[in-house]
Image (cartoon, rainbow, N blue to C red):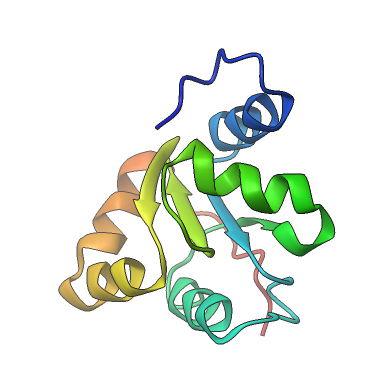
Length: 119
């Protein structure tokens, strides 16, 4: 992951988000209205967990859409961060959910809280 102390304002903004919120999802659209199938699938997985998710719509800002890719050196969106660490994209999130590892990552970073992603 890129050093969050970098002079790049987009990277500094991303670093602030992932350090401030225990679970952050950079996605296309919003949880209520995902704008791509991968973002929708990631939201669906996260709905299975009792966790507040801070969702960020990268489509609202072209610089953010590009910056998130260079921040984690990961070429695609969505991107999930838990406890300040990059977890992965849709396929990795689904795999971690299926193996039960995602629940452990979530439990390890915060106490159980009400879900912000509504049905």
